[in-house]
Image (tube, rainbow, N blue to C red):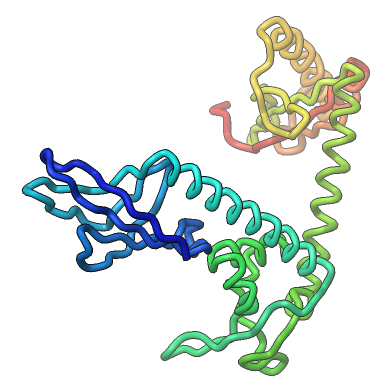
Length: 289
């Protein structure tokens, strides 16, 4: 516990301010600060930030409503250092907790929740909630699992209230599936980046479900996002796509008549690949044909 005393001027009158600061953070990563004026009643501060102790409610002092108080420079320096060190320690503990959860350590507990409809849910161990703060501990659990594992209703035949478990005991199959999915996404991202460096274009198009017509939406960047391409490149891609679609119609027609319901994209894709263009259908919507 740290105690500070200093004076402030309010309407040309000196007011003694006293602070009590605990060397720990709350669930919102704020310092625990209590304050009082002229030896009066103690109050809990809302938060401390950048030299200002902020109050939950204004205090009327000598006819002036006060919503907070600025601390002296030496006190500000100490409180800033304390807050920074506490946040740094929480970040370290957060990374440690996530790492240990991913390794499969039993650092979670099953709790029964609800009144009319009782169900079992997964929570961090109490000791880790105290170390990290409730909300940061919840985020760590979700980060380790890769999804909102705390919203799962657990099987009452497999789990019981107060049981200590790992995230893999609860959702091992889903976690493994998500891991493989992320690995596949990263593999595709790396492959896409390599091809783009080699001069390939990932042409994003809309395909009309009625006639099979293709219209350009943009191109994919390394991360797979659809982005706008330069005008010169757009016109070149549009001309290539028109040629490819005509070839496709010719291949999918009988006696010169287009069979709209059977128009494919195989000929288009083959033609575009000869020009280092990969076709990516991002949507299938009726285009008013």
